[in-house]
Amino acid sequence: MAITIRTFSNDEALVKERRKHIVQCSMKILAKKGYDRTNMRELAQACDISAGSLYYYFGSKEEILYSIINTATSEQADCIERFASGLRRTNIKAALLRTVRVFFQWHDDNQDITLFIYQETKNLSRDAREHIFESEARILAVFENLLTKGIESGDFTIKDTKLVAHNIIMLVHAWALRRWYLRKHFTFETYVREQSDNILKMIGADTTDTLDL
Amino acid sequence: MAITIRTFSNDEALVKERRKHIVQCSMKILAKKGYDRTNMRELAQACDISAGSLYYYFGSKEEILYSIINTATSEQADCIERFASGLRRTNIKAALLRTVRVFFQWHDDNQDITLFIYQETKNLSRDAREHIFESEARILAVFENLLTKGIESGDFTIKDTKLVAHNIIMLVHAWALRRWYLRKHFTFETYVREQSDNILKMIGADTTDTLDL
Image (cartoon, rainbow over all chains, first blue to last red; front, side):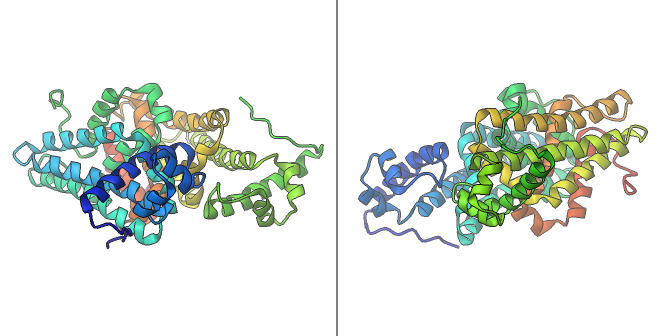
């Protein structure tokens, strides 16, 4: 389902560019101040444009919120689909671990937005949320597909690929969601390595020979 | 560290009772409307008391938020510590799985507050957050302790009990955090059973003979 965002311009490339700028600048101030505590005037200031200009690109604060969350989740889905499709000839354990690592890396690079999505998605309409969940479904499908291939090749033993795919996503999100705790005990590198081992154990895969992945 | 909440009454039992009432009623409206969108007047209305009375028990909206989150996390920690300490003579795999189930049950009974904690803890001061994290540390300690005992008895193979304890908590929280997805595919019973199996696999434990736990 498409969410319509209003625009009155015909110059699509320019509009796209300006929207991207607004999404990036708005994200920073919204993550810092909170969605409810920030108004359109402050968002315009943060983007260094007039409030009138801002309304030209986005009809409301909710439209900006939707664009921020949708951009982040689509980006993740694109990134992970592209990466996994480039690994078709790699052995399945390596393919899974490398995809998990890329997914971890995205969340390390974008911790604030991951946290922000959990905190602020509630402010979106039901339709907008359903649309966001479609990107999530694409990410889950990438991991389910890798897990299924591993079962077929005899490398993995999994009862429910849907649930394990969900668990992988959850352990990655945790790096952002529970950073107040995890940062005290783990570096990014040790977290990724140890969680990769935990994931391999969960899917009944061989946990040796993973150092070069 | 203790967070001081002001009160002018000497009748401690009554004050405690009234505060409990306020915490319960406020939680419902705050979870529904959002912390930033609700003011003290509306909280008083929801609690069926005057704004003056509300200020008698809590000096600010942040104090109420702190009490809601602190009550929930302390309750969880109490519940899980009490349950685990009653299982000292149970075999370790059964003790772990039963404690995991009690923890799942608490989060199924209290989904809204779990979600609320992830969304609204950001509104607390650093000191208040640190205090909340102490209850979290107690919960982590219960699971770490069970995992360590299982390593000592030779039932579990775990590289890092701290991380696995964290993963158990994360998979339980997910039941509330990602319910929009999980409810479409799992009942509470199938989720607990399948995640218990996934946890056993992650800790290298025998996954047979778990049906009666």
